[in-house]
Picture 1 (cartoon, rainbow, N blue to C red):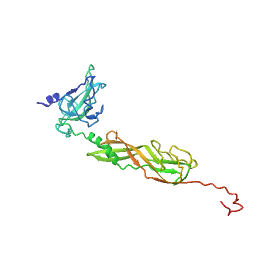
Picture 2: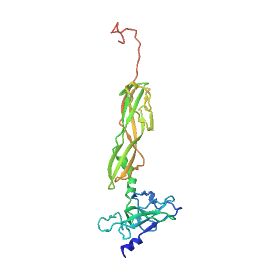
Picture 3: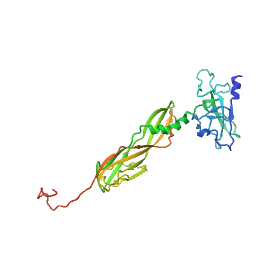
Picture 4: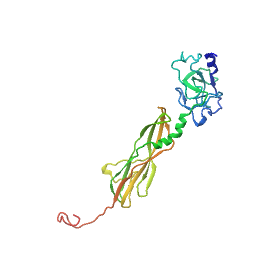
Length: 295
């Protein structure tokens, strides 16, 4: 059988009626990501009506297009390479791999005008291993293992303050990035501080809150702030802050994807001593009697 005949046989129209859902594109709990730049996903789905697996377009009731694929190296594919010997994409993720080019056209009754939307995309007779799904299943655990640095905690005044006085606290945290290898793929992780849980050491807690606080100018120390606290008893206290980080990850330079859950990173305790202020009245004039009580 000639390549031309084979190419014609393998042309498959993916025509879905308006009332159909996107169950084919959503199989396995994953959605494909189809746009004018091509197939942006490694989620493998069975092609409708065929014992073949590929990265098919998102199909649904609001999609105005129908799709077809043609063997990249077939003679009927005018946009394909003249020779398939040199530079042909190697489709080796599973058995029966071959490269195809995807086209789309508006659904009938519009006139069919096929436009190339993805070139040299692989299809297989056996479903390839879904690396993206495996990474997604493990990424939350990997995120929890990353050495995210906690926020630093400071107080004004400090390391000593007074009972009954507003003591301002603030935390400083920053976005952090990491690169790891998971299942042989390069993974870029980003951890972003989003909320904070405050523990003032005297049984008082606050949060999670997006408020990290901020330092005050020297002439405003003692003012009430969102993160300030008044201690009612003297003593030594350990103030801690847990910073809650949200994460995203990208695979091999792909788009950023959210990581389920959050990372909870506690800061080292800040030691603070609370004193009491004592006021005495004295009758001595220190100018006249420098050695008087209170002078």
